Length: 244
Image (cartoon, rainbow, N blue to C red; front, side):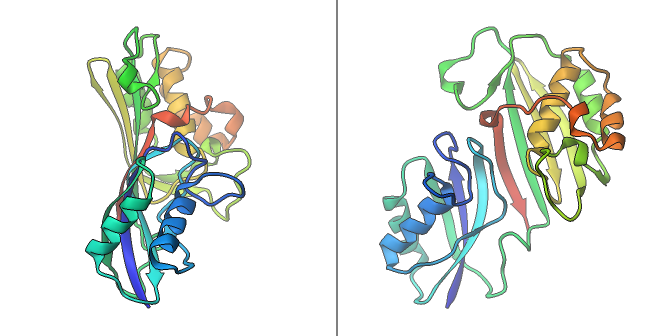
C-alpha cells in the first residue's frame, strides 16, 4: 500500500461541506469518486478538517492509500481531469505510512473576508460577506485579542456540538483592514463546529457598536452560546493553511 498526501483547493459554494453525506455533493465524496474512476480502487479519504457547507479552502490537506503505486504526476493530471473545476488537487506526494492528515495536524489557520463598501463588486459575490454598515476595526481588534490563548470556547460552539473537550488554543486572532476589505485571521490547534463563524458574528456586532470589545470575555466565561453573536455566513470563510 502506498500512502499519499494530497493538498487541495476548492470553492465550497455548491457543496455540502467536506464530509461525505448521503444524497449530497461533498468535497470528500468527489475526490473519492475521482480516485475510483482513475484507479478502479475503492478507497477512503481523510481530511485535515471538516469544512462546513459553503466554506472555501485555499489549502485543505488529505491522505489516501492505493494498493498499487502510481506516479504522482499521473495522479495529479488524472484527478484534475476528472474533478469539477471548483475542486483542484494542487499537489500530491508520497507520505510515510503513519502520516494522518487529521491527527498529525498541529495548527490550522482560517480567514474570514468582509467587504464594507456600499456596493459589492460582482466578482466578490459568494467570496466575501458584504456589510454596508461602518465597522470599527480597532474595537474588533481589541475584542479579537481576548481569544488568543488556551481556554474553553463552548460559548462560541454550535449548540449541537458534542465533543469530549471544548478547550482549544488560539495562537493568532487579528483584524486586518485595507480600504473596503476587512479580514479576520485566526489560527489554532483545533476548532469547534461553527466556532470561527460564531466568533466573526460576535466581532461584527462589536464593530457595529452593539457590544463592547470585552464582552468577548463574558461569553468565554459563561460558556453560553446564546450570549454570542449570530453565525456569520459560510461564504466568507476560508481554510487557509494546515501545519504539521
